Length: 329
Image (cartoon, rainbow, N blue to C red; front, side):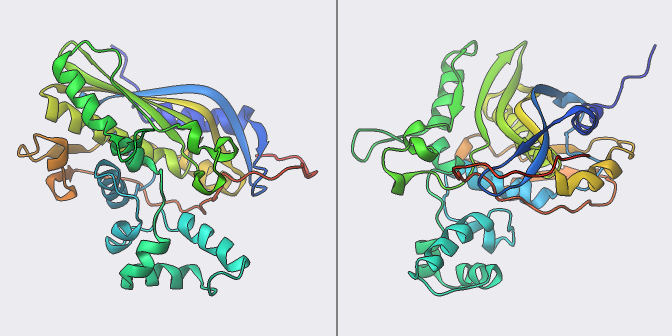
């Protein structure tokens, strides 16, 4: 009987495909350049281990704290800053710098800005919010009825409880009323990219499965993080709803590698995957609002060394195209 291929090769093979045959894309807001393919899918059977990728060390604390930030419906980065997790710092700082350019606030380095968020609650409340971020839409989807919001995540859980065969257990964050230049009120427009925009839960054969649609995917930096986050969400929802975890299915729109990550990706695809770790969630977690990071235990995570890469803060729109030399991997 042929030995089963390690599931991490799905990810590594997609990296190879992008380097070999990806098409050049340019972000008009920043000029960031990528090689890109469109419409791909990978899937992980969660009974075979927790898909925290092993060919580079994934920032587990960030995965765990960010997912809690989403689930608890928070919008202010202060919680993450207080946990010494800085994966969202760039976005409110980008907005703050725009105010600096207009002469509305005093100039600060990013380090000074983050330190101010940590130490000054008034400052954090004013400049640390990212309205309409994932957790906000998951737990507080805005409606036209004044003061009323929809808790999509709670609704999904109740829907599966009422009908295990439900086909409508969907959480969505793509709201055109607040999206980019579609927003009727520019002051309320989303100022950061919402990338993983929709997930659906389905129970099949006593197992709970979750499929994520990610419209745009930074394959080197972001996707290992996203895989772990939504796999953990799948396991959490399965426990709350009384099912075994099934599959996490990750569907991509634009899957890309930034040009300043090519060297790191070449190194990563040379590495051989190791056994996936395991995850346990304290059995006291029986409701979505019971969830806390300290109730999750990761065991036997053995990875290759970290591979660092610079985050590209994309998502803006600038009219007009600039002529640039062709991109090559």
